Amino acid sequence: MIPEPIRLAQRYRPTRHARLLAAVAALVLAVLAVFLVGMEWSPTDAFIYLLAGQRLNAGHYVYSLVAGDYPVGLNPPYWTAPLLSPPLIAVLWRPLAALGSAGLIIGWLATGAAFLAAVTILVWRNPVVAGAAVVALTVPIGWQLGLGNLNGLLLLGLVAIWSLRQRPAVSGAVLAGLVALKVVPIVLLWWLVTQRAWRAVGAFAVASAVLIVLVMLGAGPLSLLDYAAVAGHTATEGTNALSLAGLARSAGVDPSLSALIPWCVVLIGAALIWHLRARPGVSFSVAVVIVVFGSPVVNIYWYALLLAALAPYPADNSAGEEGELEEGPTEQHAEPPPPRSASPTPAFGVTLHATDAHPTKPSPSGVCFAPSNEASPER
Image: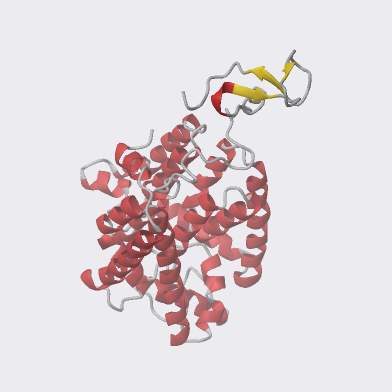
């Protein structure tokens, strides 16, 4: 199930210097990509999050504007509210909003640093494949770093879920945070279920409850209901041009039918994740692809999230795509214990026995020898 180019790249064992060179080159290319796509200083998304925090600090609403709020340009039917993300982001940005312009810079730098950290991890683990992916996704990466979108945190979180799969409490809590920031990573919860990672699922539930309480305290209970209305509109009438629903609509498919395409992708992908449950790495990569293409809102920077699909494939295969979660996949069976090996065989096919398990004849020196049934390693 592993693509052949990735399989070949996994046989390559890069030196530390090669990893470092590839990581530095990827980071330089990612930063230059911001200038290549003309996003030198356009932290639009980071500014949107800051404004949401300002509205909360003023005692106003997250998903609607009142007198005194900074104007936010809307674009119905695709953008009908001043914020399309869950309310947790507004709560987290409240301290930054109190800092004004400095808070904007800090928030923008935080999303960029998270994204670059994920890129560094991926390229360090597999310089060839991940490095090539960074080159192929230069334009989405440039847009992502320029806008300061939350996807920077999402990429690092997705990489962390795979890397920390042996720590279910941490990976489950990380997933809860990602879902609270953008709902579509909920696909990874199904992946945890298919892997029977029940401790991670439990950690997800506990962390989600804590985050819901945090949102209710920081933004009010009504913010959750307001977001449900925004999300419902976005998933039906508000699908944008680069989503599968938008592309189908542009091709002449009826809008009511095209809106169902992302849901079909999610359902088909969920079935595929179940089918591949014995291959944790492959099924994880499928889940990442669903996170991108199963979303009703897909902008060009969303494609940069596809880098997370490479997390299970290190160059030296030290934690390869067969890596298991703590509980193990559904069809995992315990391997039978290896047969008890005979006593070590010295050279020349003669075995030294310490007991009288076999009849032997003493040598002139008083040490008992018995012929060995194993072939000499030199022969």
